[in-house]
Structure formats: structure tokens, C-alpha cells
Picture 1 (cartoon, rainbow, N blue to C red):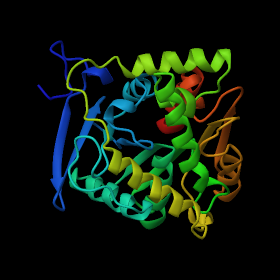
Picture 2: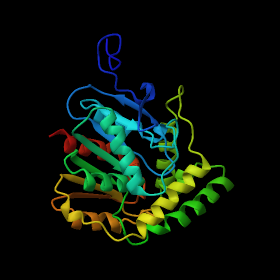
Picture 3: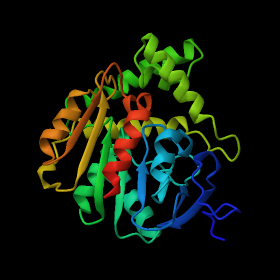
Picture 4: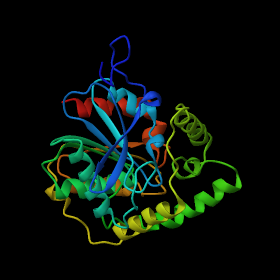
Amino acid sequence: MSSFDTPNGSVATSYAKAATRSITSGGVTYAYRELGPKTGIPVVFFVHLAATLDNWDPRIIEPIAQNRHVITFDQRGVGASTGQVPDTIEAMADDAYTFIKALGFDTIDVFSFSLGGMIAQDLVLKHPDLVRKLVLAGTGPRGGKDIDKVVGTTYWDVLRATLTRSDPKEFLFFNRTATGKLAAKAFIKRLQERTVDRDKPISTKAFQTQLKAIRKFGRSAPSDLSRLTHPTLIANGDNDRMVPSVLSGDLRRRIKGSELIIYPDSGHGGIFQFHDRFSPVAVEFLAH
């Protein structure tokens, strides 16, 4: 019986129950989880700033894992992965490449969110033949206007959350409207569905290093995204305070043939607030 099978022979698709595994390459041990049928091209998920394996919304992961081999992982120096967090997005992309090749994959689909989307762009530009399809949610291009302001926004919202004993993501990912607050609480609750074998939270030093890397990315010369010919799905909320929503439109213009979805009355976490609408779109996009 493979690790993907449940005792009755069906494929395991519950993210809360996915085992945490590890693989070592280049002196770094990467922690990862996988679920869904272990066939075909895998979908590798690139997570956001300060996030670990526990930060993926199961309502996004699980629908995709119904028919696809899904892999989530901790970047170097984050969560249960060893080593030090790099201070550039390029180096993070190199680590992602090391991890993917260690697992033995030559072709993957990428689902990325926020910082993960920045890493994914650098990965695809450097290794265009590795990636078949690309999902870029809540993210922006290298050199994108005001990306470097993420640092100030993040620290401010972490302070606001601390003062109200809330999760910072309630402020960073969602509007502070009645609808946004409800969506935020529901999202945080979903992240707590896993009750055993939870990941280790990111350290303060690692978090600060990620923020420095984002600032550098925001202040760098733009990449030539016209080189990307991969089918690309771009999504965001219409009021993203972290990575301004306008940058999703910027990506759409620069990546030929890409699709863009903007969800109303939502912020950085628009795909989580509208998971019931977004998940079927993502499943369909990644299916063919």
C-alpha cells in the first residue's frame, strides 16, 4: 500500500492528515507534504511570507488534490526545513529548484501565492522547461511599484494584530469590513484543522530575512516577463494592501496569453475569501 492510499484503497486527499516528509539535497533537508494520486505532473505549491506547511488553505489544496499529485514544502530555513533563509528571491528560487530536482521531477505545474509568486517567477525565468503551467496569486513582478512597501505594511499589521490578540493574516490578507472580518476568521479556522504533527513556526530572524529579500525584489530592475510563454492564471482581490492589486494587471499585460481574475471586496487573501469560486477555476486551469 503506498503512502497515498487509505486502508480502503482510496487516495488520501485530506491536507490535515497528509504526512510530513523530508528529503536532503545540497546540505539542506526540506520538509514537505504530498497528497492526491501519485501520477502525472505534480502541482508544487509555493507559499507566502512567514508561512510554513500549515499555512495552506485546505479548501484550495484539497480540490486540486482530488485528481492531481500535490506537493507543499518549506523553503530553506523555514519551518521544519534546515539551513538559513536566503536574502534574495533568486536564491530562494534556486532552493526550490534543488528541492524539485531532488524529488526527481522534470516537469511540474506551479501554484504560487504572494512571496511564493515572486520565487516562482524567478524559477520559471531560469528554468523555463521545468514548468508547464503557472498560477500567480496575490503577487507582482520584480521591480513592481510599491512592492518594497510590503515591509512597512507588514510590521504595522503585525503590531495591530498583537494589540488585538489576532492573527496578523486577519489584517494583512482581508479587508477590515464585516465581510472581510468573517472571511478572515473562517480562513484562520481552516488553517487549524490539522491538529497533529503541526509545523514549527518561522523564526523572527528568518521572517526578517524574507522581508529584506522582498524589498530587494521590489527595488530591482524588472525581469523580462515577455519570455514566459507558459499558460498562466493570475488572481487577486481588488484591494490588496500587501502587493497592490494593480500589479496583478501589470503581470497580465507582461505575460502573453495569461488570464486574470480579480475578486471584489477582498484583499491579499482574495483567493481564500472566494475559495469556493476560485478552486474550481484553478482545478480546471491545471487540468489540461
